[in-house]
Structures are given as C-alpha cells and as structure tokens.
Image 1 (cartoon, rainbow, N blue to C red):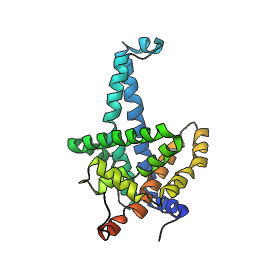
Image 2: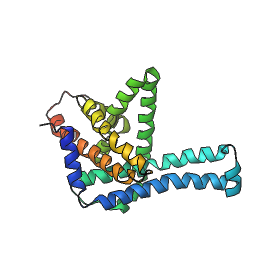
Image 3: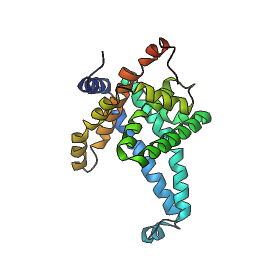
Image 4: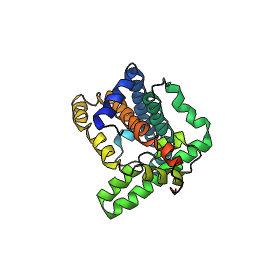
Length: 229
C-alpha cells in the first residue's frame, strides 16, 4: 500500500526522534564547508582581504578554481543524502561517515560524473520549456539513493532506473517537497536559522519517500524480466 504524503512526513519525524541534534550539526557543517571554502579561495586569489573587499569582479582564476571545488563537493553532498537515508532506516549514522566517501576515489568520480550527467540532461529538457525540465529533474531525483543501494549501476543505468521507478510517483514527490513551503517561509523569518532544522526534516522525508516507495521496487523488478534498463 502506497503511503500518503502525511504518512511519509510522520514516518520521517518519527525516525528523526532523538537524532535532531546530529541532523542539525551535519547541516551546519555542510553549510560551513560549502560556503566558507569558496570565499577563502576568492580572498586568497584576489590578493588578500582588502583587495577582495574592494574588487568589482571576481578574478577568472578564482571562478575556475571555485568551479573545480564545487565538483569536489558533490560526493560530500551525496554522502549527506545517504546520511539521512540511514536515519530513515532507523539506524544511527555518524557525521564522520560522510567524509569516508572520499576514500573510494572511483565512487567519488562516479558521483561527480553522475551529477554532471543529471544536470546536463535536465538543462537540455529545460531548453524546451521550464515544465519539462522540472518533470525530468523529478524523474532523476532517486539517482543517488539508487546508487547507494545498487553500486554496480553505471551513471546512465541509475538515471534510467530512476526514470522507470518514478513513473506514477512524480506528482507525489513534487507535492511532498511543496508541502514544506510554509516551513521555508517561517525559516526565512528566523534569519535562516530555522533551515538548520528544516533541511534535516526535508532530507529525511525524501529519504523516507525513497525507502518506502522506490526501494521496494527491487522485488517487483525481480519479477519483471521484460523490464528494460
């Protein structure tokens, strides 16, 4: 039986019980790393803080290096998705676990390549119209969760599998994430501090969506030999 959006959210809140602290801590750490490192790069390559503060445009070398850094952050971001999947499965993750993704360089390269492909395909669809781009983005939303449970999949196979499994679930996924918009406005009024709690809630809800509706299709696929990937 397919869970409703309210049931998914209730289940995610239940799995977060006793784990809000570590979820907030991870969100804050990810924010610090992804926000501060690029700024430090710009300051250094601009010749110091005073030059950086007075510059009218960012040096090209800084933009190029920050682009490279953003690619290097992709495995960390994906590992944070997996962190909340562990919570959604009622287990106890450790923040240090997300950094171990870099110990497997082949996995890190696959995650970076997959992210680039997903972005490329989404942009191509968006060139047609915004709505098709959004729909395809939702179709690709389960890619990294699928790679966690099925590491043998290639990037293209994971993208194809996500499209297949999201058939009939795209609207529910859209409404699930849209249901947090009220909380987002409240978080804005807290000068952004509320996002430290909202982000773990959304991430766990999306992980619960995958765990309850998408992952169980492994059993269905095993009984569907005609399903092409």
